[in-house]
Length: 264
Length: 261
Ligand SMILES: Nc1ncnc2c1ncn2[C@@H]1O[C@H](COP(=O)(O)OP(=O)(O)OP(=O)(O)O)[C@@H](O)[C@H]1O
Ligand SMILES: [Mg+2]
Image (tube, rainbow over the protein chains, first blue to last red):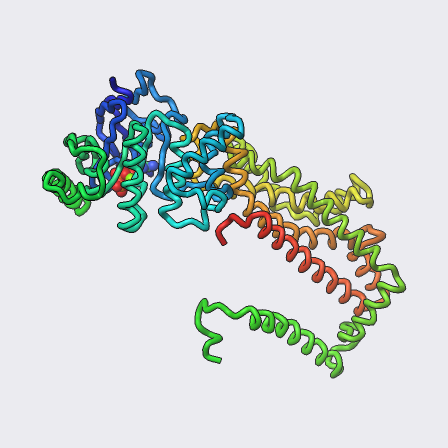
């Protein structure tokens, strides 16, 4: 059963000024996402990864094709597709707990139920002691954990993450990967995760999708058959190294292509 | 001495206060020097001491406190009415682009109409009573607030708005529970700025056709060539402005402690 279907989705941005050239950000792309898939999307900078994710979220409209959620075409953003952005998008006037409750409050959920759910996710991302802190007092990792909890609290059918750990240092990043994977292994969710980082892509995914240089399209789709539950030790296994060698080669070709195109 | 002139190097709080006081001391000293030496005649400029004496007389013989209260009341009244109209309108303009397209050219034009030039017309329409005084301040403040609030609200970070949408918020929720709180600190900052301008409008309004107020007192003192009273009046305006500014800043910090400084 496919919960999310991307059918011929392409995006052309009109020229910024008269007489300019239109930007093809994304070539028509097909991707069938099965229920509880964890798909990571890898690709060189500017190949349209964010564009694709934003279209799935309903924050941008494709110029061709369509996105189907359980057979229904997506018209705009909605709580069934939660999103975590790379840049910090917490509401600075709300505490961590209030941020996590935002979607629940918009839904009109009773306070007691909100408290229960936010308590559960605060625990899950390890921020119970920081529940009443404002975002400005949090570290980058804590901010992204809050953003993750805020998206999860809404219980979306699909979780969309656009380089959520891109701004974090390596150690924090590795911890965040384990945290996210732990949550996915426990609760299962359909996840689309955009990243630049090959290790991150393999470690998290059961499918890695590689995109070509701009204008992007899907180049290959690699199933990752590493056993669950995974811990950081999996990154040192020969199987992991094999995936990594293969994906590194795929990405290298595209990055060189992207680079030579930029030079023209 | 050298460490005073390192670009962007912060000053210690003690030194900051000392330097701030020094600025005033220098001005008063120059003032005293030019008047005490006879360089400028008392007819044109009273000395510091004469000004203080004039101020004492104003408060204890001429009921100046009443003038001060009348003026403060006018400023606050006009300013509050202008804010009550302009802030909601500015929010709607900032959030909804068609409304902005409809009103922005009109208000941008109206903003350049000098409030003081309306005074004769307003006297014709509303007489010389309080309505006319409040109207001058209202006209001077309302368009400015409206446009600045619209710009602030329109500039709320897109990520916050998009995050709200993906969490299930609808237009109403996005405007009321995301754009409004996100813009609130800057809106307050704008109001603080405009309140300062309202002070200049009220004095101009009181120079013409008033029977009480600080501006009226200054014009009245001119008839007797009492430069001490005039200077003291101007000085009081400055002090009240400084105090209200300080209170506004404090309120801002209290209300918006969550905002990154
Ligand atoms: N609003 C827009 N208007 C015009 N062009 C755009 C717009 N948004 C993106 N683009 C262009 O579309 C292309 C794809 O952008 P996108 O942000 O999807 O890339 P990306 O794969 O996410 O890159 P990165 O890895 O750097 O985040 C880029 O060339 C970009 O310049
Ligand atoms: Mg991107």
